[in-house]
Length: 206
Image 1: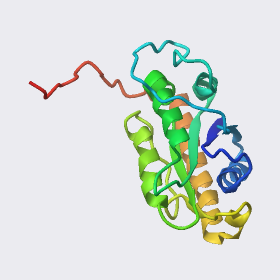
Image 2: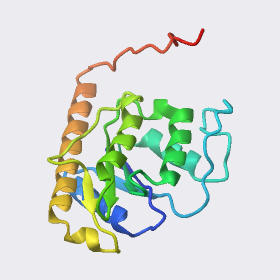
Image 3: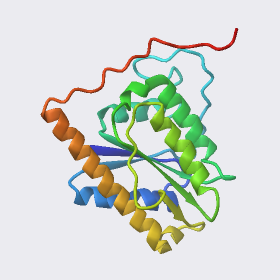
């Protein structure tokens, strides 16, 4: 089994990466592989609702969206990490995930998901809430921890000083590993996935 993690920071090895790496190290102890997908600092376009999505994902191929979707199809769990900008997730991770989920939400259904927010001080829970909404609309069970999944730090390396934050990341990894193992045991026992429907789309505008 494998967890795919998204580093939504433009800084490849900053505090957001530190939080994800702490999760990854604990996942390995639980016998689960992980990969940190670096969003990086290259431009990312917004979703424009063009409706041209395909089996490969988004119609636009000038960034990493479809590369991430291909990896997500093979993964068994997801963790999305973001720095906090003005009490909100980074604009780049939101633009990225809007296109990922709009074009390929089936790749994520019934896989455990978790969000992680990193900030100097405030805005972590608001950012955490925004990312969790991608899971709720996509039939993804949410893995929790012993506190909200947040770490504090501004300058590079400061997240390593947040002992409670690091503990929260390790406990999150333990909980996610447990969920994934339970789901795998269910599959092996013949427990079928829910037969959910998407045929009704009510429009309240008259």
